Length: 309
View 1 (cartoon, rainbow, N blue to C red):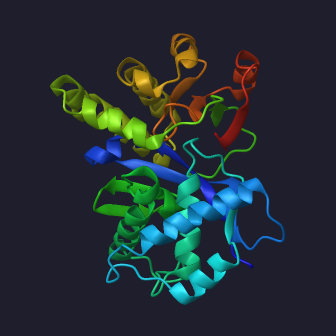
View 2: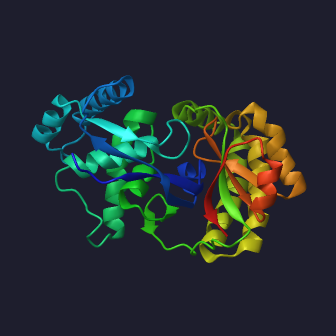
View 3: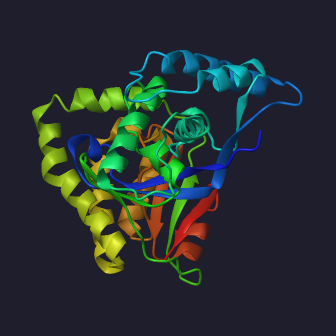
């Protein structure tokens, strides 16, 4: 089987806020990727991936065929050949492992699929997002559909609101720049469904709900606008405020061993950390104006650069 690669994604801004209709900005991350394959030989990881695809296919059969239908003759034939998803995207790390799989299945088997070659109107993007939301809900219980959308289009996506999304150009990377967006490996996988459940329970509390509406969304939206506009001075001021707010209010989503590290970045202004996806483990997203300095400060942690300023 010769299928395209589907890349990981980074939700730079908008985690949890997009549930409350905030802005968001998601970019492809081609360091990790996956593709559908037919195995030449079996091993444990291939068998596990194939079993997951079998379960996923059974779930897809329950979806409204008027919204999304699949070439089941082709799909079932490949399932009989033990198809699996060969992926380097770490699972439970907030970089879209299930999103890439959903995008690959849609590309390979969906009837009447929307392609990246056509004029991607707002209506088509929303339709794709809704389809992907239903498909990916199999993995998380609830999905915005944005991860598969980003992986499928392989373009930066600006979320203005739930009903207004668009592909967008972002400032080109400055490979000689000192600043960077980077990932820290927390060393433990996260369970997205558990984190979302905790968040939804917290939203029932008036104080937490008000904090999200009055502060979290305000800082997150400002970060999106600053990043797209290339306004770095304002961006780092707003990221600092957002980082502090998350540290104070999203404690379950931050691994215990990273609380002190999170606060140290805020105190020193050397770097600012934020959630990457739902949090609870996986990757943590960092922003700094001096990555060489951060490499020394965080020398005991695995770091990956996502974007150079």
